[in-house]
Amino acid sequence: MSTVTATAEQLRLQVEAWNLELDELQLPLLDRYAQLLAGYELANVIGTTDRDQIVIEHLLDSLSCLLFDGFDKGNSLIDVGAGGGLPGVPLGIARPGLSVTLLEATEKKVKFLRHVREELDLQNLWLLNARAEEVGRGSEYREVFEIATARALAALPVVAEYCAPFIKVGGAILAMKGRLAEEELAQGVAAGAELGLKLRGVLEVKYCAELTQKERRLVVFEKVAATPKKFPRRIGLARKRPLGV
Image (cartoon, rainbow, N blue to C red; front, side):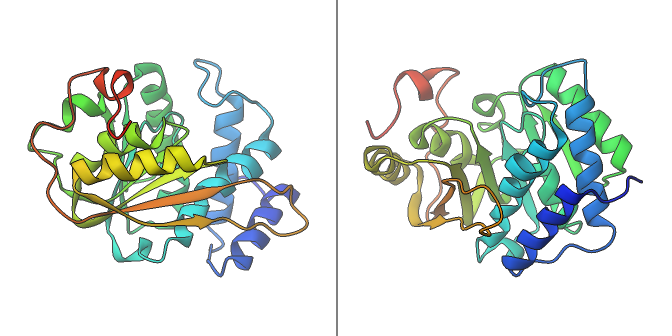
C-alpha cells in the first residue's frame, strides 16, 4: 500500500471540510488509484500523468458527489461513460457498501478498469463494456439503479437520455458540470420532462481557500415517473437530435 502524499492530505482536509469521512484504509486506496491512472501506458484513460493533479482535479471532484444529500440512501450506482473510472471508482472506495457498475463502451478503458479492480481488490465494482443506448433498452439493467452519475460526458439533454432508463422511480441522476449556461440547463429540464425526470436542484461545489478554486456543480435530477420505452433512442440520436432543444 502506498504512503499518503501531501496532495492526498489536501484531499483529506477538503473531504473533512465537506463533513465527509474517509478512514485510514480509503485514503491510501485513493492515492494508489491516482498512481494507477498516472502510470497506465496501454491506453489514454485520463489525459495527464501528473498524480497530484489527478488527486486534486479528478478524485476530489469525483468525491463531491457525496455532497448530494440523498447519496447514502442508495445502495446501487451506475457510472455512465465511466472512462478511467471517474467518479465511480472513488465513490466505490469511499462507500464500500455501495454496488458500483462502471458502464464504458471503449474496450481499452474497460481493460484498465479491470486492472484497477484487481490491483485495489475492489469487490463492489462491476464492469459493463457496452453503450448506454444498447443496455438501456434491455430489462437486465433498466430501472434497477438508485443513482446514476455522468462526468464530462455530454450536454444535459444527452446525459438525461443516457441515464434515465437505468434509474428506478425515486432515484437520482448526478450530472457533474463545470460552467453551466442557463440555456443548457433549460434544455436539460425540457428533456427530463420527456424521460420521467424532474430537476431537483443545482448544487455548487465549494473548495477550501488553500486549493485552486474551480467552477464545479452537481445538477441533480429526480426520477419521478417511468421512462417511456422508446428511450434511449438508437445509437447516435441523442447527440444528433437532443431532446429539449
